[in-house]
Length: 130
Image (cartoon, rainbow, N blue to C red):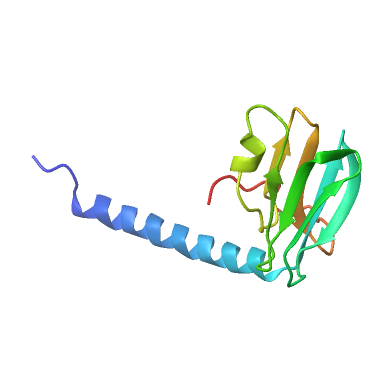
């Protein structure tokens, strides 16, 4: 008794190839668009940062000076340091694609990456994983 038939393998191959093609098109489309980082404190927009700068910067927001952000020359941003207990925000890593976000819930800070031109109804809401 065979586990797979020829038709099963053909269908699985077609699904995998079409998924890879759509993923590649989507990845090219998202990574080609310019993005900005929006920093929210208590659901209020505090700062908008252009990620196309080509210099490394470390900064904090006036509302929470103990939370440090780092912008990298490659166009990504991350939580550098935080005074919260669990440090999940620091371990969330670099954000650089539209739809990615990270939060420091004890400090009530959220960083979202959005397209520079603004959102449209066809945009992604969030990107999970890499």
